Image (cartoon, rainbow, N blue to C red):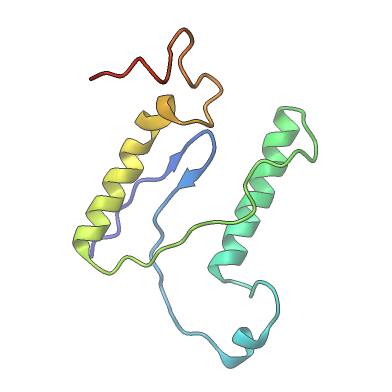
Length: 118
């Protein structure tokens, strides 16, 4: 599989594909409590922590939570799945207008129960 993948930062989340270089896990790492150093969870945690600190420094909104607590991961086994996920990542920002987390949703002066496009 070719691992060229888009990264998209949306207003409420980050979409990215990262290849797994090694699946080797030592017995000691499995027995540790919490997040093992170098694991996907540790990498995501560091990214969230550092980016939240920098963004909150710029805004200035110290200690305001920026990211949701968890993250969703998925192992991509087939090339067809990889293509579908890439398409989803690229097209995801286009769906922001219809996202309930969008502060401008629903569109003003629109009745969400009656103003259907069909």
